[in-house]
Amino acid sequence: GNESLAFTQVITVQDTEDPVADQITGELNDVLECDDVDGLAASLALAPAFSDNCDVNVPAIAGATISTKGVDPEACDYYNYTITRTWTGVDACGNESLVYTQVITVQDTEDPLVDQTENELNDVLECDDTDGLAAALALAPTFNDNCDANVQAIAGATVSSKGVDPEACEYYNYTITRTWTGMDACGNESLLYTQVITIQDTKDPVADQITGELNDVLECYDTDGLAAALAL
Image (tube, rainbow, N blue to C red; front, side, top):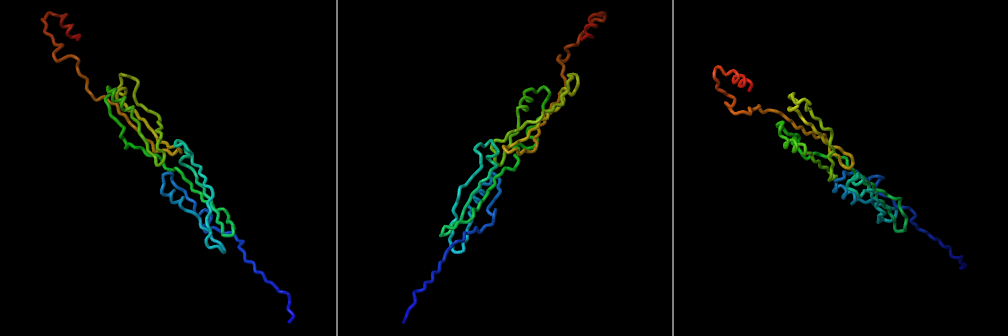
């Protein structure tokens, strides 16, 4: 009946392993156009999931969200920027996963478009139509963009074929050609838009005198009168 001292076995169960993300690196990343609000909303709705060797319900703990978006709508960084979000998975025992990072890249890569149709600003004018010429020269195209609401119209060179000699036809029959491009805040450039103003002289001259005004009736001996009439 002699009995030994009690022998004790202690089984220690522990959770020392960190959770791991279910998504591979970069899986939640996205590249979007600056006007893709639905795509951005969908990307911002994403979050990684984490698995653990023991804990079946590992919460994703969100870290800071960092955006490089600028504040000036006239600057490119208002349309070209990144949004960086981070998470860690923490199990019930406080074991923490590596940081999981999502990078959303927002960019403006589309060129502006002109609002006017081709040749819409062209005009054909008579050479004496100074008001019409002034009105045509006051015109300029406008441009729209998928993101930038204030696209600049950049004027190119104005080329005139008008001659310099008032006694030559090309002084009155010529063209004025003007060009523009639209450029957004990120430097995306539209196709060239061209206006051609055609100046022409198509009207026939008209006599300043009315019919018969220079006619005369002379005596047969009126040589001076005849000379005067012929000088008209």
